Image (cartoon, rainbow, N blue to C red; front, side, top):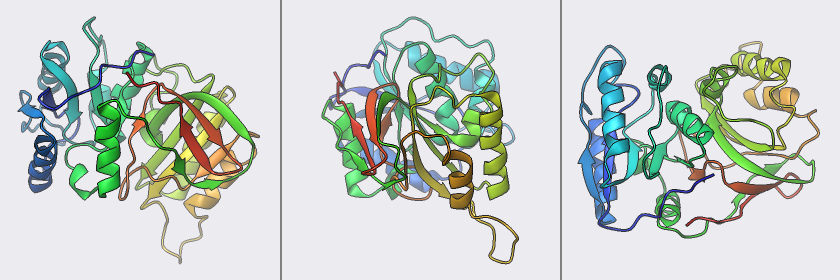
Length: 297
């Protein structure tokens, strides 16, 4: 996996909106200010404020903005404005042209871009988008910039389910987006990976349905470990006859005989620790740790 060069203050960073239409304008401005306060030259990509239904412009407009940023030789990183829905639409007949690699930063719906970029052998960063960055705690913001600027990542601590230790390639994702990439040409190989999964707004039975789909496809057979982040707004009211989302995760993943760590600080509606895509990590299911080998350039 190729790691793009580390950033340094003064670098040009372009903002693109490849997914849902922008609506959180105050948070957007605050996110820009955080990046600028770190010394970065922030440039808004073309059509950043376009709207086409629930999308941030037409497919052609969003493809154009992403391509312009990717091929700009002066641009050192691309930060996505927000998630939502729409990035998978851009990947039909899409090719990452051969240019010097640069950081692509985002999460949630941006999973599709991160996974497809990883399939070409280039690492990205599963991390806050511009509109969620202002709500991050200081340590999470510092973690994001530390990694991009070449500093090592400290381990993340969660709840260990047992299973010992395993080393593999980290592949972070939104569960819903990743599920809809399975059996398409877009996703990277899953053998030898440590999956890092999160989601939001999915009822327990829908999480059950997705994970059962993974099981039936055999998609989990080569996975060496699973790191679970936050599954926010996924539980139904107590009056509903339903398992909790935690019970579903235990039921669908607990018998895989691999290290699993849950309650890690990443995902929607809370702390969203930066996770590099395609780097080697070690997961410790007994101690509840996700450790990074820190080979950042």
